[in-house]
Amino acid sequence: MSEIRANPKECNRHVPFEEMEMNAKVKRWLEDGIVDLFLGYKMVMGHPLPHCFAKDKIEEVDDLIIGTSRYSLEKIATHISACKTDIKIGMLARDCNQRALNVLYIWNQLDPENVQTVNVNCCPSNLKEHGDCSYLEPETPGIYKQQVGVDNTHRPQDVEIYDQQERLSRWMYEFQKCIKCYGCRNICPVCFCQECSLEHKELIETGALPPEVPVFHLVRAVHMAGRCIDCGLCEDACPVDIPLRLLYRKVNEIVVNIFNYETGSSTNQSPFSILGDKVTLAPKPLHIKRAETTNSSISPQEKN
Amino acid sequence: MDCKFIPSICSYCGTGCGVLFEVIDGKIVSTLPMKTHPVNEGKLCIKGWNLHEHVNSFLRLKQPLIKAFGRFIKADWDEAIQLAADRFREIIEKYGPDAVGLLVSAKITNEENYLAQKFARAVIGTNNVDHCARL
Image (cartoon, rainbow over all chains, first blue to last red):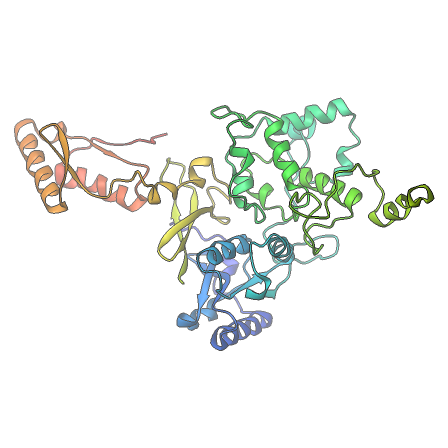
């Protein structure tokens, strides 16, 4: 265990009022049996680490913090509920955790009846200047990456200013850096499939580095459509800084434009669920919202 | 239901990435990169991500085996340790401590690796210590 303290400010700091209030609430929840376990953060040797609080060690709740780092607590909750299905889990939830939970409820990975959340402040964004989260704006890329790669701070439309050829070569530069660590999939809160296409021997060749580009990344990107909740944990975990969040944002933009499906806030399964009864494979006009599509599709000829 | 998070250091190579084991009911279910660790800053390679897998592997040897008559025979720990100690002593007395070398493993913990090198240096008296992932 490293002796280096990650964030000296975190140690012996003044406990803000919201945190005291939060701790009292969590204590009450555990004592009253509203939740059996509570997933939050605690300082361990100078690192804010996830911690599971329980009734039999109630005094630990005093150490509960919101923390500056972000782990996928909802993924941990799915592991716990896989061992014991009826256990009631409480957890700290930032906005991204909340969106991930919604997706997990929809896909029956967690039962919303058994999950309670304490909502806390989220990442800084255009709407929120102050954030308590580790996901700050990504670093400005170096000169070489600016010349040949894709800037992680870009939005999908910023990349579209490059012509097709250049865009391809820039993305290929990013993809060929891949060391196939599977970190993006392992850390993803909404990756829960028993069998993963990325490990399928016939789809993805084994033993080659970098993995077959761009197929490896595009297979994952396609699977992220209607699943990705834009938390950015994949990009955070990528050892070679591939702008994955940007890629999945683009994919989800298509899902919003074509199916009017907002991943993380829509209450039904994504249109890509082949098990869903409402899914049709009929081509839909591009860039038209669902409401308009339905109106225009009921033309007088069809009625007859 | 008992769920714990144990911080540790990845034992696969000398980089020293910080990892976090997710332990549910005494069983390691996954390895996570430690976000605030100064070495890896929340990133891991494929070996680090799968650090927990050999712990629960069905191929794992759980009992000492003694080779006798060309076959491996199950033994208890006392018997196996006694046999190893006797043979080591024999070899050290005959050829000196440098006739013994110790190969430690990426698949045991950082702390066990430390104990193993201590055993080689302080008990056997040799500096012949090596590790399978010496990068």
